[in-house]
Image (cartoon, rainbow, N blue to C red; front, top):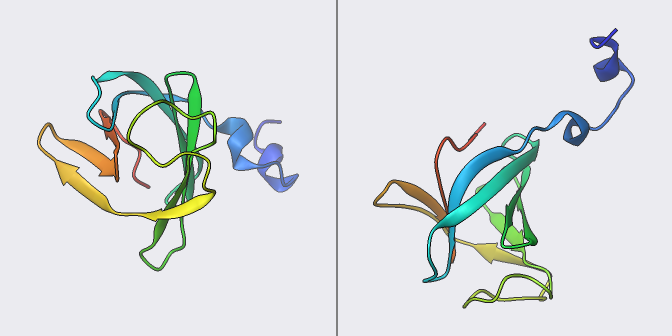
Length: 109
C-alpha cells in the first residue's frame, strides 16, 4: 500500500527523515542539528538552536535562504525574507551557505 502514496500526490516532505548533522552559525560553536530535505537539490531546511532556516535552489545556480525573524542569534541576517547566499566548502569538511555551515552525511541530491 505504501507505494501508492506517491501516486496520490502527497508532498515528499511527509516522507522526509531528518538527517543528523553538526552545524555552526556564524562564528559560533559546532552544535547538533538536523537537515530535512523537502525536495532533493531544490528545497531543504536546517533545524538548529530551536530555529528552522530554509533554503531553496532555483536550478540555475542561485541558492536563497530564509532566516526567520526569531532565528538564531548570530551574525546572520534575520527576518529579511529570502536572500541569496554563497555556497562553499570549508575545511572539516563542511558545506556553508553564508554563515550557516553543516558537517556530516549531507544529502546533496
